[in-house]
Image (cartoon, rainbow, N blue to C red; front, side, top):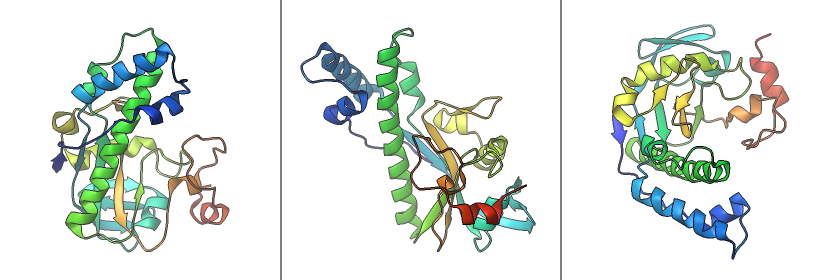
Length: 227
């Protein structure tokens, strides 16, 4: 497991104002600037990854680094992969510790937007680092719980954490009993080399998902559906 903790980030007030629907010249601008100043002082986005190998395949189940995962989509995507990269990126637990007073819903919303920017910085830094260090070509990523529930069940988040070791000690990310991650602006997954484009949105039926990047792919869904 390798930890990436010295991750640079920037926060553009105009971009955040647009996301938060804040108009210029209002008191809200100064309130947002105050939160940005705090985030710039305390924010420490982080990431962790490991290099793992696919050791065994048996139908929809495959073993990676001694941990078994069952997912038709994951098995299909890793059919020609031997080396994979389990990973986690986070905005950093420091952002939760510096969170504005509970009860001010507007400030909490702005703070969540700022946390998302730190997470994006960690994601980009980790992705660039992996491609540069391991000279990776085209890659894709699968994330537990992303897409329809049957694609890669969120319960298998536990196995992903086991692949990486003591994630809480390494970067302060906790896995809850419901397999959600704390801080909430944290992502996890397995990065793998591929010649074929894949995004979890392609096998997700949620039409109005705000995080959708590509359209639902009916043909792909028919290939990997579990029913």
